[in-house]
Image (tube, rainbow, N blue to C red; front, side, top):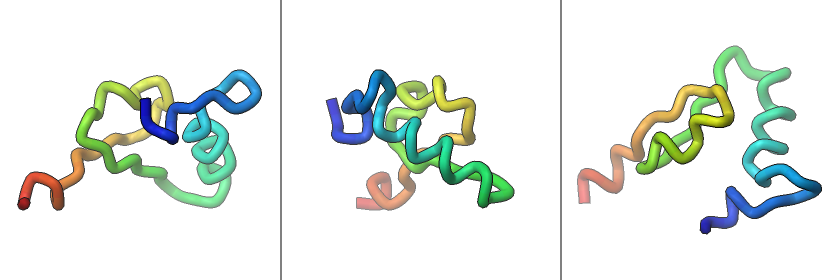
Length: 54
């Protein structure tokens, strides 16, 4: 499990961050190779194109 999914007060760390950012952004986008892993956030998840280029 990556650091982004570590639970903090009962929720994954990335969820705490996403909940704070959506109030300030028109669209929050998660960059991740495993797009299904972050579906629970209900945000756009795009694959990491740089990793594919290597």
